[in-house]
Amino acid sequence: MKKLLLIFIICVLTLYSIMICYADLQVQAMDTSDLPLAMKYEPNENMKQLSAYQDQLQAVLAEQLQSLNTLNYIYNLGSYQGSFSSKSIYSSMHWHYPHEENVPLFNSDMYKGYYKVRTEKLLKQYQSSEIFDYNAFVKSGRAEFDSYIKGSLKDQSSREKLMILLQSKLADKLIELAPSSRKVVFDEILSLRQPVNSSKGLDYAYQILESRVRLQLLGQMVDMNKQKLNKLVGNINIGIIAKGKGQLLLQSNDAKSNEKATEIMNLMQNEEGYRGLALLQEFYSKQNYKLVFNKAEGGLFEIDLYKAVEAITLDEKGYLHLDLDYLMAVQQSAEVKAPAVRPGSASVRENQFKVLEQLYSSKSKAAQEIIKELNRYGIYMELKNKKISNNYTRSFEVKQKQWKKDMDSKLNAFGSSGEADFMAYLKQFEQLDRYGDKQQKENALIARFRNSDIQFKDTSQGILWLTDLLFRVRYMQ
Image (cartoon, rainbow, N blue to C red; front, side, top):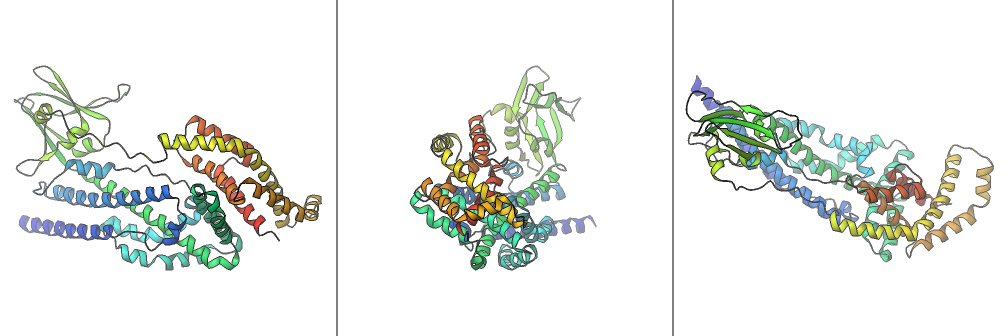
């Protein structure tokens, strides 16, 4: 009976391994070549970030699937005769990419609803099987988007909200363009909201939303695999050995920490040597920790926990083990890789800030005049939409043609590309405000821009409001 059970387990794990290989092939096939509009107005720097993010997600997924395969064998059979890399498993559990994209379009209920429609069923399948048929997923995209949009855009107002979010995202491209190139791009961006371009606008919306859905899906798969790996290492033991007797402690590197050191019990209390037993989770789940081995004959030896993780191997019987004598003899090991630094920080970002600071000094007054007039127009439109007629609306209507002429003059005077330069000016402050690690001087400049220029508590909401008004002014009757 035991032999039959063992054969069954081996068959299950073999099938699981085949499934892992299948899933890996699917992951390697991923790209966004079928979404050209999503890339058309993507800023170059962000394009590099998104490409690097996708490449690393794919690599991590493949590594995680191999780690799951290895740990499942060990968990179910107790020992393992294949190749084993403790470092690889650790990185599979702790991989993090500091990718930030705090964009209103991707924070919107519209995007969140579409993501759920696209991925809910697939993620449930992946949770149980790790199988992911990317080609089938891609093919179903446009049909699911059209169905979702049909149910979501129930009126003109909801469509306009989507288009404003879309236009604001596309306008990010204006920042990196030369002033001479901005007008043509901004003209197309604004035109997407016109009824005659409804189909074109939805094409852009689909491809941009879909491009982020695919990335977020990969990221969520990585997180799901992390959870599975964490569960497995919480059920797998590692033997820890040393020739000399002693006490082994797991201790935080933080001298200010109030957390007590955890002792790893010596199973050979009354014998020579040390033989401890610990769960892998105690090693894999902690960061900035160390092992402290207090030798019975005197002396203390400290081992960086990550170095200990790297040194976990399989013994001749296929059991996980850690040799403290080896660690005490060899002090050099690969260091933990520092997380990738997001381009746009350090010196590059410092230079960008200096340029923006100078731009603010030279353009803030003109921007405030434009926004002041747009605010007047916004108040008029709000009253008109509510069908309120008063002295304010009547006065504005009497002077409307002259007001439009004056507004066009102000926008044209802002830069060689007029309103496109004005929007590029606004977007630079929004882009800076998206960073989660802003310095005090950056926060101070953004606060001045919000309080003196757009007069909004939230920068991104202020830019959406101005995007809407610029469209209305452009096509003002």
